[in-house]
Image (cartoon, rainbow, N blue to C red; front, side):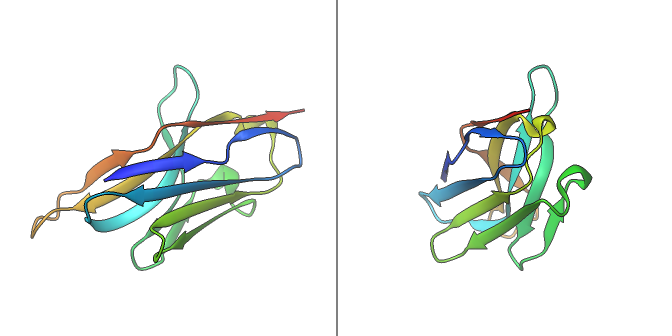
Length: 120
């Protein structure tokens, strides 16, 4: 499975952006899709994800500002980012977790990063 992310860019503080990530390729049993972000030298942190049954999780820092949603028919996940702050500046990575066969082991697939820059 491959992930194609889009939607990053430069925005002023208080502005908004919408990230999209489309999955394609071999069908897999998707457990969740989501977004992580990573600054140079730092680890990749969860921003938000949505499970196959629609449950969502958010990082505390984005709660109430970001909204994750998923179009199951299009195999696409979206991250609506409102009220952006300079601290949100990072490279954002789309993630898909899936299982194989009867195993419960989770496998990760990552999209290419998309840069979000928020100016003050």
